[in-house]
Amino acid sequence: MATIGEALAAAQSQIDRQDAQYLLANLTGSSRAFLLAHSERDLSGQQAAQFAKHVAARATGVPVAQILGSREFYGRNFAVNEHVLIPRPETEILVEQALVRFSGNKWLKIAVLPCVLDLGTGSGAIAVTLALELPDAKVTALDQSLDALRIAEQNAHTLGASVTFIVSDWYRALTDKKFDLIVANPPYIAAHDPHLSQGDLRFEPHMALTDDSVDGLASIRCIITGAKALLHDGGWLMFEHGFDQAERCRALLAQNGFAAIASVSDLSGIPRVTIGQHLPLSSTTV
Ligand code: GLN
Image (cartoon, rainbow, N blue to C red; front, side, top):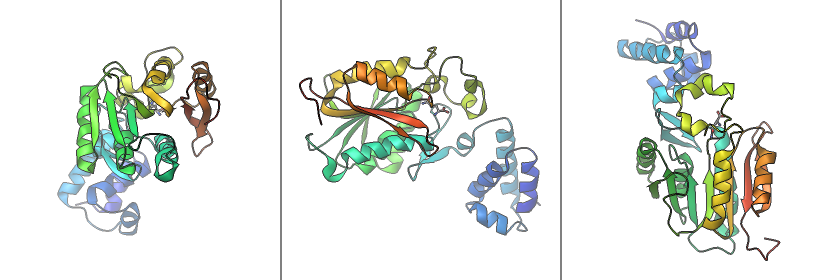
């Protein structure tokens, strides 16, 4: 029989220390602080065996979120598997920027029920969060992957969110419906970026990470050019992009007639989200 301390020591010779603590905390339903304070306690045989399996999986590179089958995003747990991108903290910027514009009285000039579209929803993290945080919004989410939509639907159901899911390659399957907000965390990693063959990314769906374009911007171009026809006047487009793509994204939005263009940085000061507003041609200000 192994104690918590012995199990962690054995794990740490194979995987990252924090990952080991996180995996064991999850397995035992306790906090990492509790584990460290009670290292002399015995694990059950079943817990020790399960932990050894998780550690072995992590040692082969499987992301912690895939081992546990979930990842927290904006304070809620989302189911994840190998068919969806693992939600990342920087993507919460998209949610925050949407909420700044669309919650409470900040809602200007637009219909009573804001219509939101999430492109390439993956696990549904953005769409489900927006549906829960903006209860008046009508949220539509699309993805070209049926496997991803299955997980997104499961997340919407578990978390009690009302979201309409559509199978679609970007805007292709959409009819004449218009939106007040279009959000996306599209694939944006350049085709030959070495990160694609490193770390967690090796285990995430290729098509969620890169569209195989040389500059990584093909999907973003398609999203920007298609958004104009689908946004109400005054509506917003906001999307995540790579650490060095903000300037090019702002230029693309400007070329396509968007106004109020701005990039928002993550906690390390890296611009990760760029935003533009669709205004009628005659108007110059919001
Ligand atoms: N943010 C991810 C990464 O760089 C990529 C996700 C994406 O392409 N949307 O690890």
